[in-house]
Image (cartoon, rainbow, N blue to C red; front, side, top):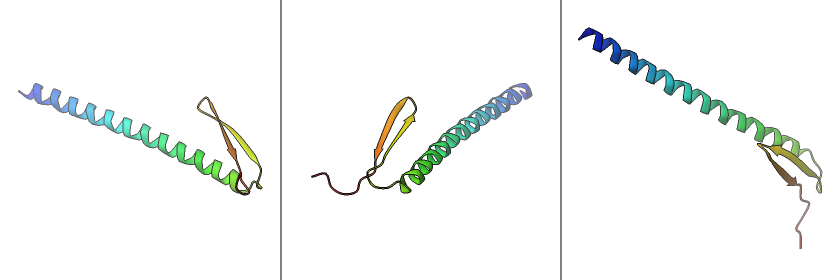
Length: 72
């Protein structure tokens, strides 16, 4: 009986550690995305109207055009 309890406690502990690990990984990904977006926003703010900012994000190119008015 005690062996079964020890095994069950070990399995619960392993499951909790795995859950904590996944949570930390996802939290880190979210923080990285926020940091990238803040960096992009900071760069865009200092650009004059008519500027174009090209970035490569996760294998795809993102083009940001800084507008100075309507396009017709």
